Length: 158
Image (cartoon, rainbow, N blue to C red; front, side):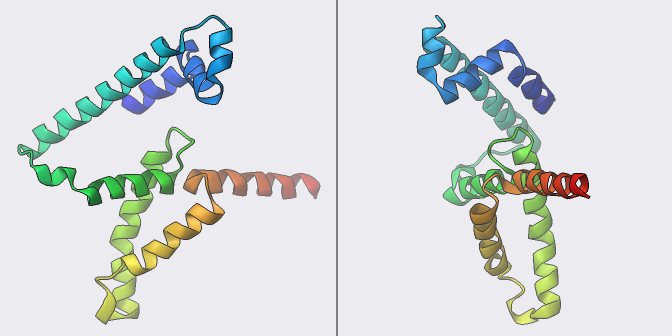
């Protein structure tokens, strides 16, 4: 539901102004709009989404602990966003799916290949993440878009 609402928001006038603020705040101000008001509204919407997620998570877990604020949790979330693609709206969702799939399949594959180090699946995941950052800065979605463009280019030439 939040993803659909965000998709609608980014295509609205408000969302276009926020994207313009990201690119060039001086231009938005020159158009007679107040960047502070739009940024503040954007931060409030972001805080509302985060607060809603926190409330739902606490209700689901029926327990809240300071352990949830450990740096490794933040690191996982950043990895998910980078893996999926930061510049596209469905990027974090795709990143979460890819991250969870790799988290489940890499230990199994490593158990088949080298059972003694199967618990150290991050040895493979780390270099994969570095390769994504180096060669696909737009994440998995950016890589898919590049592949689609390449396939369209080859299909149109023949």
